[in-house]
Amino acid sequence: MTARRAQEPSTPREALQAFTAYLRTGGHTLTRSRRLIAETLIRARGHLAAEDIVERLRRSGTPVSGATVYRTLLLMRASGCFDAHDFDQGRRLYEPMVGRAHHDHLYCITCGRVIEFSEEQIERLQDQIVRRHGFTAVYHSHKIFGYCRRCTPHAPAGSRHA
Image 1 (tube, rainbow, N blue to C red):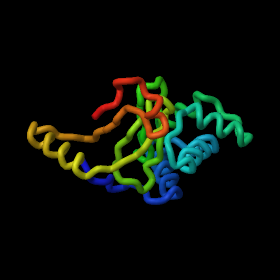
Image 2: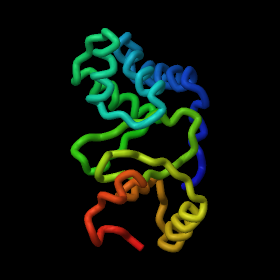
Image 3: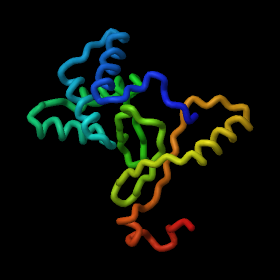
Image 4: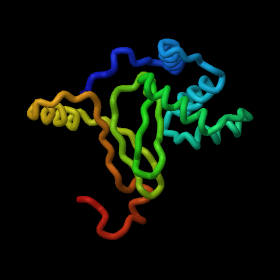
């Protein structure tokens, strides 16, 4: 589960090229809208919701519909160059996986901050559990929900995990 994808791109340009190649194999083209949506997410180097992408493009003078963004995000995720996360807040957050190894997430339930982390001990333990159960893992997603450093003083009493 800790291995990187063999064809994972290492630069934003390579991510766009890989996405373009993926589109071609499915009989799609890299339209101007699709390119701008992909570039917006690649440049963000973080986690954006579809609505964030629409807003950023419109602010830059590029009119784009929410439907176009959602359809493009589905293609982007299917390409393997981008990932999506559901943090139980009613919206999915997307991130580029450009030249990045697997990582996990801490999610602040107060402010929505996403903190990425990698921990080899957790990965090894997951691998042991998978082997012990004779399970064939394809992928996994590890998310921890709580309060970031800025929001911890405002956390409800009794909510802190020891």
